Length: 93
Image: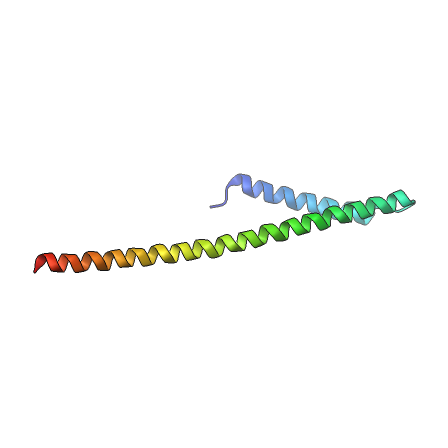
């Protein structure tokens, strides 16, 4: 079900995350501005983490709703079959 574009985007996200880790590991602090730069990167990462948490929460809600919808549709189909079966018997009698 996953498209090629989704796979490519997944790989790009992984590459970007690896780049950030490599950059931060090699970043040397020489001044207050450098310290501020690290603080800025951390703030961006915290914001990204919070956004990912919101996305995951929404994703889990969609999974639950899709499951409930599938169960409801299945129950409706069963009810329809039972209804049709009863009326076929009544029409035959």
